[in-house]
Image (tube, rainbow, N blue to C red; front, top):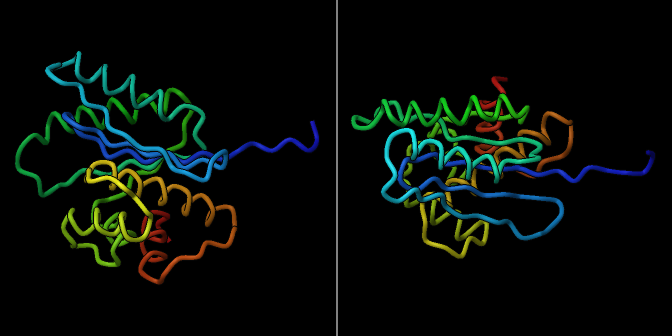
Length: 177
């Protein structure tokens, strides 16, 4: 069917067992959407299933999803966060949804220009540069991840992407070029 175009949709996921942030950038609207999956008192497999179900509803029909990678310096909860990361990666793979994994320092470099800034600086950059009206680090990270997914996709497609030098360095890191 000539003339039909598919609207592109980019999702960012900041995975957490207590408050998974998500954000969506879609060509269907000029306003991003964002929120958090908060499984409350659920534990174990029930919590993983709840997060997976909600995340997959958000990621449905996405052009590209960006997931924040593991914080390897974290000392607590690594095992269960690894379980969650694995559950989400397998679910995206089984759904045929393309995704990239973005290391935390690379995400920070995209947002602030420096890979070692604290989470609060990423939130402040989302407010200042992206017009994010909230106060959630989880949503701010997810919003930056959605922007990363869009930029990576555009670079892969040979499209012009207006980025700063540090931002392009972050994109190249994700693309391994």
